[in-house]
Image (tube, rainbow, N blue to C red; front, top):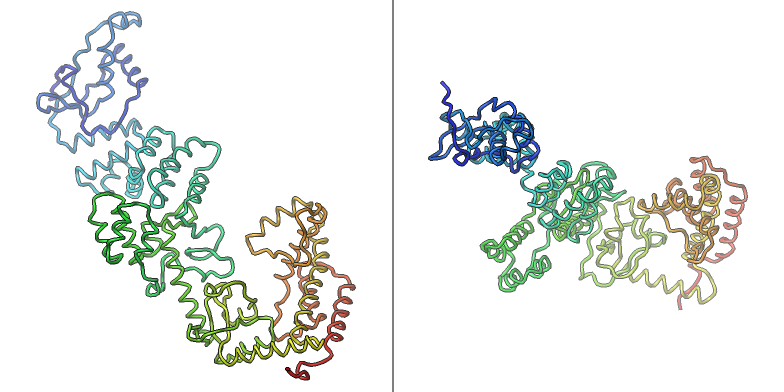
Length: 590
């Protein structure tokens, strides 16, 4: 039998587990009008709690009674309602446990869809923490699966300001989840700023664009991989032609043993906090600094201790606390760690290149060296013979510019990472040959090496003329702005700058710019379409042979080249032969 009692309003308390943080005044007033007109049709359920009564459900009806109790008789008569006293409220009294009270509170709000995302997340958290429920059990009460429960609970990890914007409906759950995905990358105040910008830019900019723009401004954040712009498994960086330039985010087969040692001076570059810097100044090493900082009370010191722990023993990139993912973009929030890994990865790659080519790595004890020229026949011969004096040297150890070694790349040399040099006796012999060439020049005779240089110049000019015909047929219908737009689209793919002799100045006319850009685009296309020139190929000095590789490129895209270009190639061959009547072997070195 139900026990109905009338309880003064000041003795009634809301459900302690009421998940709603605020009330809708319009909704409360609407219920109040219904009660004033027709009475209370369903009595709320409550339990005794000391000298008070706690509602199990009926929170809005209780608020409506408080609203009516504050009205005067005139308010009722003006609206045609009977004048009554609302200082007491009828309740159904039951013996109810805490968990039942919680379920009543949540169930009432879920039925009316009264809870926002943050209120729902808070209610789920209380059910988990206070009643020891699993994600599956929470999902059963809230009518969702356990994955949704875990995702909803994560909303509580947002900073307070962002939670408030989400709770008030000013920010979507999609935007909130996107912020959560990059929360490890930036401080809470940055997340707050981004959330405010998302709200201010609603309907103008996509929230992913706003977040990405904000991340790009952070000097310690590095965008490693973009799935829409690259293929294969995600890596720690993108390279259009050499995916192996960076390691997999899973760090499978990563050479951790090659990571450089972490010094206190390295660690000091990670912070400007004076207290942490004092720890670094007094610590014996970074291991000791990590222990000292971990024992301190402030959050910034503890965070630095966690950072040092990661640097000492890096986890896989995709499981690192400083890893974030925004849609198809993968980010690293600790650039210094990425730099250390890149150094270790490059060292391992150079070691593997040396192992593959059978060439030793350069050592400072090797002394002076000369970098080989990939276009020089004598240097190519040294490389092909794999003379013992060859060495592989890391690019970052070389000052200034160095000659191209593209002809060595098929053998495994990555000249972005390392180059081939020669030391010892072979280096001295090369220097003697240079002296011989200078003697020939002094005698007014061109050396075979000058022959290659002359042929290279004529090849460039022949290509530039051929590019004109490619441009006419392929880009003839485009105006200057269209060609500029096409150049912008292609520039990320290593677009050639064009030969030096054809460069135009800043004050060039639109017509000159138009011609230059069209030819430059065509030249890039020819380079990609024609067969490569082998190191010992006649195409290096025979212009007719070289021209035929350009014709093959033209055939692939349906471009017709005039006979005048073939005649120009033939004339160039004649000029080269006339310029080199004497062999280098007939000249004695003074």
